[in-house]
Image (cartoon, rainbow, N blue to C red):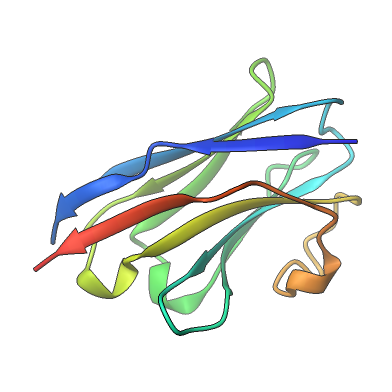
Amino acid sequence: QVQLVESGGGLVQAGGSLRLSCAASGRTLSSYAMGWFRQAPGKEREFVAAISWSTGNTYYTVSVKGRFTISRDNAKNTVYLQMNSLKPEDTAVYYCAAKIDTYLSGSYFLKNYNYWGQGTQVTVSS
C-alpha cells in the first residue's frame, strides 16, 4: 500500500510560480511511475505530467510543456511539480498518483494509476 500526501498549493497571481510536493509512504517508489493530474470545477480530471521513478524520464501534456517541471527526490521519496508562468486556466485541484510500473506508456490515463493523494488547491488570479 502506498500513501500519497500533496502539499504546496495556494493562491498566486498570473505569471507567478508554485511548487507542489507529493510525499509517498508505505514503500519505496523505485518500480513506480508517478503522475500529476488536475481537476477544474465542472471539468474532468486531466493529465498534467508523469515521471518514471527508475529512469527519470518525463512526459507532459502540451498545455504545460515548457512551464511545468516534474522531478523526484529518491532520498525523500517525494515527487515535485514546479509550476512557472502560471495562468488562470491552471486553476484546479492538483492530484498526485502512483502507477505500479515504471513505464511512462499509459501514464496519460487515470485508470492506469493505483494510488491517489487527496489533492491540493491551486488558484491563479488574473
